[in-house]
Image (cartoon, rainbow over all chains, first blue to last red; front, side, top):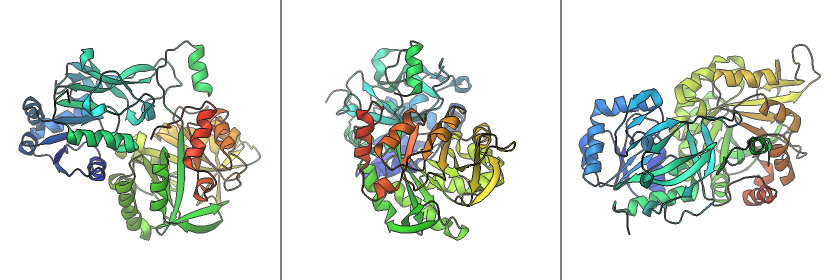
Length: 207
Length: 276
């Protein structure tokens, strides 16, 4: 059973439906004890870091997530959920959860022909193998919608990159935590494959 | 491969990856049935839209658009239900349009699972609707669709293109280019440029119109109306400077599959998603 965290940050139904499509039951909760007691956690979200962090703190979900991480529960962050796991975000200079060293930064594009948000299908290049990225080949594309991206301090936390004027980290991880900037629930078969692999993942980095 | 990449290369920028062009399929829905119009007048039903959508999804379409062509208030609940069903079966972005008149309409469709909503006539009648919807669900989810016809340029319509509403039948006297720029300023995150003159003709997209608007705004532009052959998509994505090409009848009637169109574009050097 997967527990999806609902923290008032966008439509989480699409993630739940994608889990159903790959035959994985998923519940939705904003209850901190359901998070610390979860078997597996998906931490999705769209929107702004400051309001998301405020809501998480108000519900006690920030502490619950940190404790779940320390307890070794497999966690999958998506989009905003891949940004606020870092120490801070440039979006409103917000202090974040600090589960991965580094910060979330805004695209600074020199070229006016490139647009923000970075929206659409783009290539994801795996730079370090990870059980959740098994079977992802060069040239595979995923669906993105974002203006900020995660920038881990240590390269060992970077698993995949994409490009939009600059190369940026689009998949990161630390122990039992894995997160991606793109939307697996909107990326067709390849996205569903990642969710399926997460459902099978025990949180260890080697098979 | 298009203006953007050419200019980037000239400026010596390093590019490892970049956004792909998108193939968008539009399904006109009437009472849960798939309909296709010819020049916006004669419509006939051609099948189950959800089954068709699923087929296109598996065949690699990048995005889908569902247009509620009845667009009546009574039909709202049917449409919400329809969107929920689509969202259970399709795992790529899709948008919904037709009859969206309020923030509430837009929010309900978004919550039902639509990634984006399209506004058209109601935004022409009251342009603040664009900013209200963008504020509620985000610019990235707010698409302004425009039905445009060619006219003789006048002082009021210097671009030589006029906005028409109510499914392409009512002229407004509003300049097409002005409306596109205004839509962007109000918070639309994307534009659909539908040429009434080209719609259903299969003679190709209105390249001049598409390029004129794409070059005047900094949000993505989806070209619509006139696709009959793969070359037409190539032309509008390169010469027409569009970010996405919308097709309908050429895939609905089985002349081409999404795969055919994407392979054609890929073989001619257009970056488009092929692994799916």
